[in-house]
Image 1 (cartoon, one colour):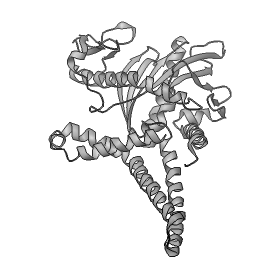
Image 2 (cartoon, helix red, strand yellow; image 1 turned 180 degrees about the vertical axis):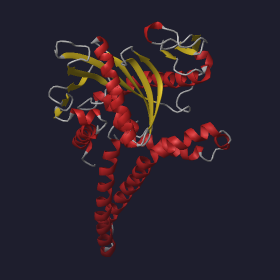
Image 3 (cartoon, rainbow, N blue to C red; image 1 turned 180 degrees about the horizontal axis):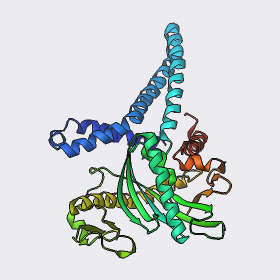
Image 4 (cartoon, one colour; image 1 turned 135 degrees about the horizontal axis):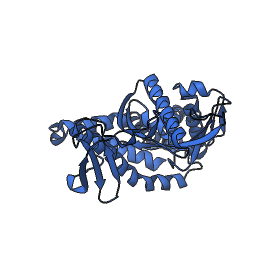
Length: 358
């Protein structure tokens, strides 16, 4: 954890220097990105910088308290040592709380992708319900939401939908939604009233700033095609839809929601950058996960993380063995009882692992 905090502080101080760099000041888009990242790191970095300063002061005060030949100076140093230790403990608790969610927790932007899994049309309808749940939660939090791409079905579900979220604590809270979401209910298409089990998967991608990932036109292939709607019917006579293929990773992204080819390209590029960034970050995440006792934020879509049981009005999060009988409330966007429970679990794990100061 100390290594991670050192890296965060080093990055913060690098960004501080960039804020006075004439080249950065002359580039509005880069300046905006630097300011955004600087702001996201400020709370953690300034506390850790103070923590390191106090740690050094403790060493100096301890040296005086133990080795000074002046009794008054030893007494003064001992008194100061006690106050410094109290402040350091308080800062350490704050740092542990701010570290919950990993090194990307302070990101204010992410991209979420929901895909219908097993269950046919019912799975697509459940994917729609999950999107509505997240949309309402975003509204409650005051976050900005933007649809990037969607593939609707004729009954109003989604085979897949991707959208961007922006706001305070976006990634810290939403990253734990990655994985498989299972629903148990009587489908709208079921005539005999039998309960079916369907699945939808969710992925939460960190959205990188331009300064974090450089993507040149020669790094990917750009194709255009006619947009189409449910059932293959054409909804756009012009080639406004965009497909981007990244050569190195083979990642493919497409977008057709906008009538403007330019807007579709801009959205597709955002998603492509996020998926590429996620691709390269995954190895680092797996390495960090091996050092932790739990892997709540692993983001593996094959991992079943939650079950939504409609007949019992029940939601169960399998990672922390939490069951709540308030399904309708949660689907209405009130996700905090689930998310706060996961954050509390993560805090407890961090305190157990890193709670003792040297």
